[in-house]
Image (cartoon, rainbow, N blue to C red; front, top):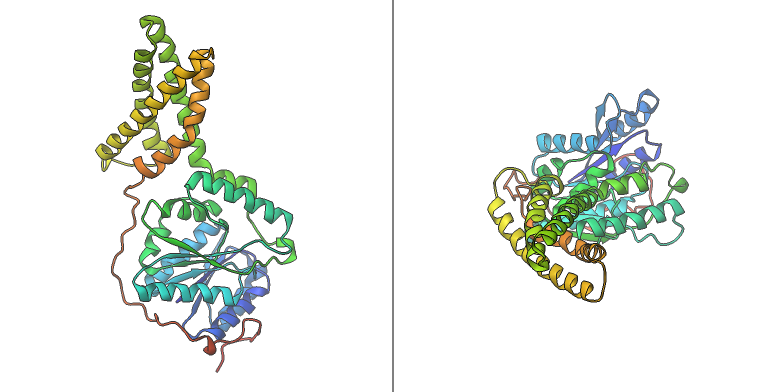
Length: 378
């Protein structure tokens, strides 16, 4: 079992965390990535290395995503077949919680059901307002963008089965957007997730956190924003065509059908390429067929709404705006999960080297998480 800790300008708590982990579980190996912290922090990393951790170094700061990928590459090269637990370097993840996630990975492996294990805080007690508000915003944005709920979208404490390590490493994005992309894509890739409750710990008012609630939440929301832009483009095309065809034919229903055919073609092309990142021709016939089913359903709803609203005297353009607003959320969810929900992105379980340690470690063999040894037990 590998505990991977990306670290940028860490405090002295890092050495204590390394020492307690190595002392508490003889099956754990700790890998620390110095993400360009600079000479001033060299003693901190030297102490962690002296305690038994493997320290990998970036010459300059590249961001958390790059640090995690460096660690994943090392594990794949040197510890092939081992599961990985990622943890933060700032002391907000206790040894007991890190080992709890590790044991959950072992239990899943024993059942033959690899699962991405997420250590999630409940944000109870004395939580800094910045962190409480930031996480509330991030949860709402994540649910809207991903279509499923997660109680702690910023958790850095994650258990990754060895079978999924390459898939996790290859997700796009930088900084915190990378970790969010792993969560946003896992359902589409067929990767199960589950939450494990962990302690909510904030030290020094969470001053060490590099998470930016507004900016990083907007990064998470990017697929939804792109979808909104695509929908606005389709709305504009649809509206123009509707007005033109209505003026030419004088018949509302045929005009609606013709306008929708044109706008749906534009919408499918933009969403496939820009929003849901489908590449190449693979799967395109199936996606087109599913999109056709969705388009017919939306068209029927569109006709019903427009007819009803215009009968009550609502102007056509206003009726059109109200109708599209009602159907927007439904369309996004259906396209995300049904139309483009199975992609080349799908993770594959590949047999690899047998992990060196799979059996859970008895609780009695561990030190109490509150103890602070300076190295391994003899």
